[in-house]
Length: 60
Ligand SMILES: [Zn+2]
Image (tube, rainbow, N blue to C red; front, side, top):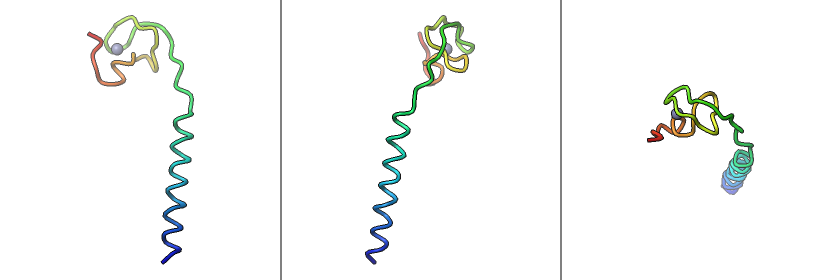
């Protein structure tokens, strides 16, 4: 069943290539302003939320 192994290796390679592409994808730049969720003034909001709220954490 060498073909199956070759195919699995190929799939793994494709997955790795995809992961590398995703890692290189630009992070949203964000804008300074007041977070819509916690109301804190933050230097970088993405979609209106600060990094803490996007991560499910509290800035305080
Ligand atoms: Zn916030």
